[in-house]
Image (tube, rainbow, N blue to C red; front, side, top):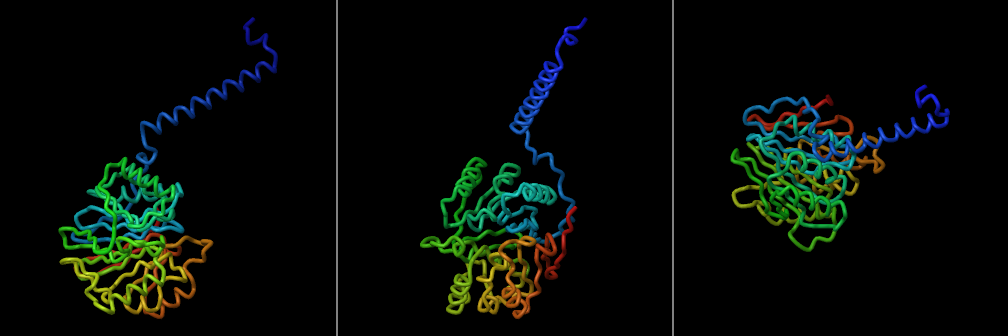
Length: 324
């Protein structure tokens, strides 16, 4: 007779439980080893994206819920990731797949400020793609999340640049971005210290805002009234009154997109990054009213998903990227 047959039913149950527990422990250990040696994100397939046209610059305003992520895809094939959404794993998966789908020649990254809904995905992107340069905000709120981002950037070995007014990012094709705000020192408010960028390519211009409030907008308006060339940096000309595309500040908050700011920019297109049914009620009804009164055509990620604007010699073309 086999030894197993002499065991009581209770003993056999205990043995089965022990075996199942051992299998579970070995499975978890195997996952840990796999995670150390391989990246889960590295196994993700690339998103199915349309190819960029010859000489085209594309702005990708990605749907990352109640967060921000704008990808500038330059004609040379390199990309600049401006903000990287929040801490949602599904958003991280989406960002990794999207960048893979762009097949970038190189990647740089830029954090407009240190709020988690803007920096949450950077550590994953740094791990998967690295970065030639990481542009950091001038104001450091000292949060644990921001400290973790700085540590990830340090580990990735990328060049780090603190952004302030007149810093420029330019490409051989003639495309450039100029930082309009913040100043290099004296900032005390995290939102108003967030980065505002002016982008220009082949006669089409865009203003890309972080989370600035109407107070910072009105300051920029007053400065522009004193000298409309004030924000130009070297050969990179800035004319706020010639703005075609506005990435709306602070997810369409009621305390942003002031009438004075919108009147100065006179943008044809306004893009709002916000989450479906978010608890902040973004975008605010009064903000939408002000944008409409200013004559801007409104595009929202919560309603449309990813919004892509291709810029070329003939102007710009807006398309909606459906989820694959």
